Image (cartoon, rainbow, N blue to C red; front, side, top):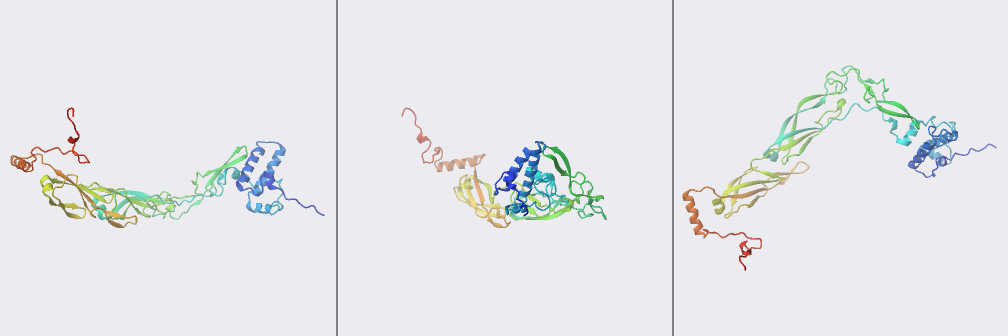
Length: 388
């Protein structure tokens, strides 16, 4: 009767429960590896124990092998040796230990060479527009200076009739490795290959026009339509009209930024406009009608008799177009007209006499001060003189 082989207790080797998660298993292995590694603990029993915990981590870190353990089997009973085998043998190398300590990115495993074709950057150009142009919208041709696809090599970077070759230094991997000693043994680090700059291939005969970059700078014309209602600082995006990427990569976007120039008459507050109208004293007193310029032409503005300085007249819908997020116009803002009454500073003899007669007719030769408060009481009504 043959002897039945007992499956090893890989969970017990690491000192974790059978339901332990991957992070708990990794923490347990890290702790034991620091204590038992031959560079730290040269004792023969510690080295044997280190082989056991390394094997246990190899098994429990592999989902398929762990499934076999959970079913009562031993995934290493396949002719490759038992738990006393070399932890750095087939299927479990130093990189696996480094993965447990620093993550799978250590050593650069699985990264491979980077692509020579890179997406292009966005470009920005500023366009000055008057208030009227912002209100109406414009369509213009712009001259831009950006990187464009090289016409000689079509972005490959190679001279006509040649092609890239695999880098001899890194063997096409795009990275080179260096080995250093640590308490865990040999630590392998990776960095981009200095010869091919991480591409994994070199261009033996670069294109003369672009020097191997796959793109050149060039001036070109681009048409742009600025919608009605734009304001200072707004940007219009032209997809795919920016810089072509290295290696002939897709172009970025071109952004046209609006710079609105100051207006002689109007100031802007979003979609609303403001202007100031200065009226002669007589016109404000008698009332009149004035022709008021707007962004769309001229508008008659009726001034009521007795209009005072500080009066604001609102012309509905005579402001700027309201630009929606989809580029469409949704109505217009208002035009706010601020009234100022201009008092004459120089009068001739006849004008002075006429104003004196008007003052006498209105009983205003010696006017009372009307410095009223909000409750209607004059300033001097609140003052007391003497001992009263």
